Every structure is written in structure tokens, then in C-alpha cells.
Amino acid sequence: MRIEWEPNFSIRVGVQGGEATLSANREGLLSLARIFADLAEEPPGSHIHLDAYNSLEEGSAELILERIE
Image (cartoon, rainbow, N blue to C red; front, top):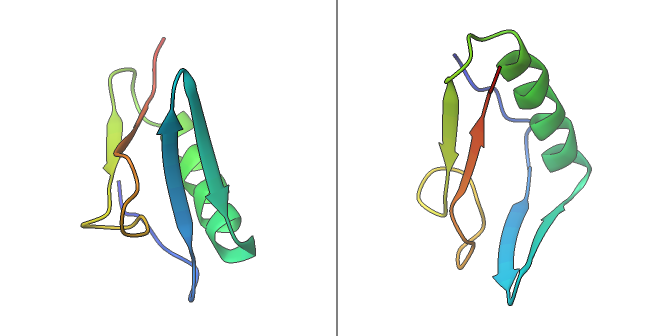
């Protein structure tokens, strides 16, 4: 699956206690919406790893998006 990011996207994932927070600007939300839509068309078990090294803001927790069933 090819991921396309909107220019100037910003996405941050934080985890504190038992809560996870996903924060994004408009471009980040549009990018994530496209990723979710594309992932929905992939077979179960397909997944994407997002982290501070490839897409998330520095200091973000790793986020794994996975298609089930």
C-alpha cells in the first residue's frame, strides 16, 4: 500500500496512563483519512507502522494501524 501525505501534514500520538491521544492538523487528518480508507480495502492482517522516524512528530508514540476481519 502506497501512503500519500498532504503537504505540511503534522501528526502527533501521545500515551499517558491508559489514554492515547492522536492530534493532527487539517493536512494530517486528511492524510490519515486516506490511509484509513485505503487500509479498509486491504486484506485482513494488513497493517501500517507510523512513528517519529517516518511520519509522526518527534516524541510521538508509535502507532500501528491494522485491518482485522
